Image 1 (cartoon, rainbow, N blue to C red):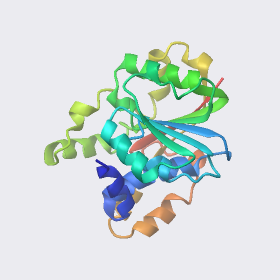
Image 2: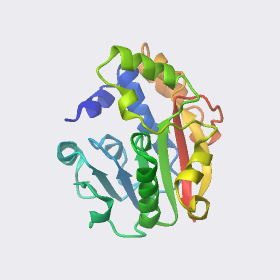
Image 3: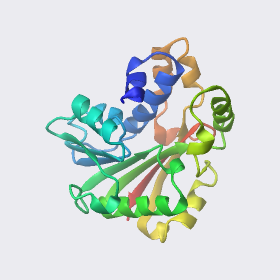
Image 4: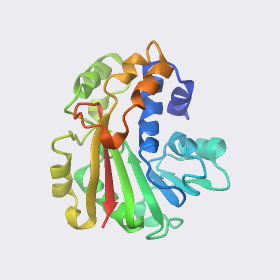
Length: 238
């Protein structure tokens, strides 16, 4: 419980930078201030815990893992930030339609089947305000990630070959979403597509703060190199 939150908060080494920076990169790309944000698959609440009230004055995280939600509520819950445990999108009574300026789905869709991905996107479309932003991250299989995944499968306790059932890369992600989500182009427009986690996680082995500075020199919208280990998409509800 709270395992990856503790790793991200440690701010030391590759694993810590990997988890911390995937959240920081999204926050660096936020456009406006105020409003409401929903994080789907919030896990231990680390991401929302990094967002101050002046950026989003209403913050909700949901996850299927009850103990992680309890951890998130205890550590990061407050008057403007709440976490909820749900097993079914259709039973999220605290989440009104057209209520959110931004919805984030951070490293979730690779764990889902095509039908589950479609259900998630339709749910996000229903809950976003017109013009609201949907931000999605997922491993980029046109990068070093397949090699990293192979090594982790062999030498660690985590088996990504069992967990990652839907693969995307920088070049095919738009086409695959078009095929997966009914009327995708009528529901969302792609504002930008970028990658992250290329070299800086490995700089963090020696100098975490220097890795942070390097990673923040180019904003997400201006980073065009397609070979970072994570994809980052920002979509807008039509």
